[in-house]
Length: 99
Image 1 (spheres, rainbow, N blue to C red):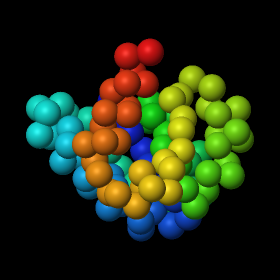
Image 2 (image 1 turned 30 degrees about the vertical axis):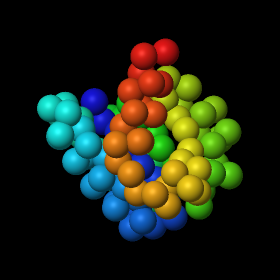
Image 3 (image 1 turned 45 degrees about the horizontal axis):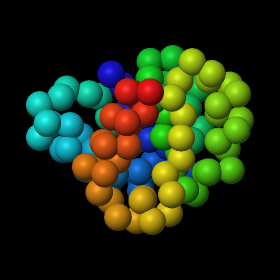
Image 4 (image 1 turned 90 degrees about the horizontal axis):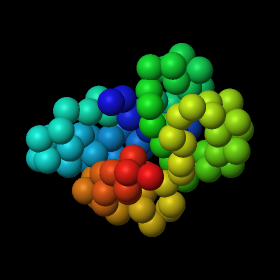
């Protein structure tokens, strides 16, 4: 599974992507997790199953959901993002996949 995190420049979400990768690795799950700047979304959306928007671009949620209706799309809250807790984000994703 490909999980893509997006923010203005891809810098801050790269830290969260690293934490999320580590959480999946610790669970023995091999998911591809990458961070990108928001402008890269059209280039990588086809190959990703989950699109996560950083709080800096939460304003784009409705547009992204409309443009990619076959993807799981959500935003990270500011506290969730600030915690940089990959395990919590993994649990959130796992919950969405079960529904």
